[in-house]
Image (cartoon, rainbow, N blue to C red; front, side, top):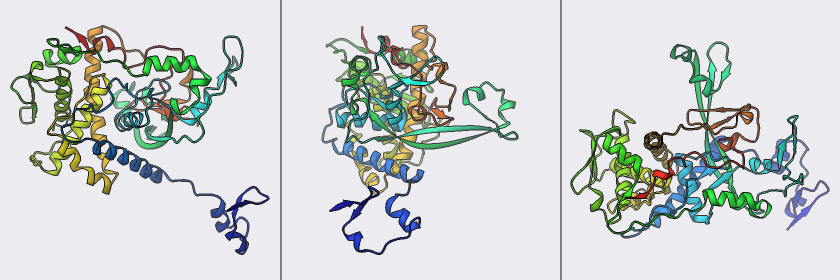
Length: 443
């Protein structure tokens, strides 16, 4: 039983019989005030959660696995600003949406959700948000009892070696190589808790905004591929035809593999796949392998023979990389039959050391970043569009961005944790949708 004393602080019945503790003593402070978690403690808890989710996901893969890695039609997780998450964050938030049944893969910090209730007046002062009629909008908040999920935010500080003056990454890349030599670059990782929009009362408080998010980011129907038709993803087809990947991609034989010595990728023709979309998911698996070549990410070890721990780890990287790339571009991703044993073999490693996932997902992030960058580049050339900077200049005064385009907090404002893209709630298509017309059309 717990009673409340005059200071409105909980006191157990057992504690009443103990001698009084001097106010202000370390024992007194420890009794009523928990010590703030360190960055390391937050990271450890986050990795525990990540490992638990991946273990649950892998344990669900049984027998001849036919179900796609992620729910068909689920879109890529993004911040409330429309900024896509990457690597580790993208994988875990996607699995979280599947486990919890979230329809909209949009996330925000508690501070950002609270900030939706305010806007700035002509003098720059924060005032309550109102509708077109000047009426105060209903208050948006996180629902009672909801738990946040951790995401990692990479932060970069660029400091002049002599003056110690800091500059943004955007300004740094504009400098000449000689000028850049005058700066030191420091990286650090922080953990921030985020909530899904379905964990808030947004649907009731702002139904029009919620419906807009659902329409833009909710599950998308995957076009059915009829017999005799080919599933077409134009950017990759052009990449193959133009030989513009980091190594040649040859359509030949009846097996898919990456040959490091050449280097080259061999993959069967689309007609040989039971489901025509499997051509691209299989190719993405091999493309992920190819990023580990010594001339690129240098991840592959020639000594890792078939069946070795290193070989199995690389299969895990390639399989997760394939799954994330497929999800990013709306392509169903089925697991290769010979991959399941390798994934299962890592369950014990995840149970014993959750931090194991850190190194694996870092490799996945780098590999998928290379693949997505090349696909988007080709997609833009096909569409003959110019990639837009969707950030709002008016809101960027207190932000800096690192090489991954993650927002860096400067003055403690509430935007720091959301990888700010700067789109307001009324803007339309977000980054990543520009290639949509090329994603999957019938020939």
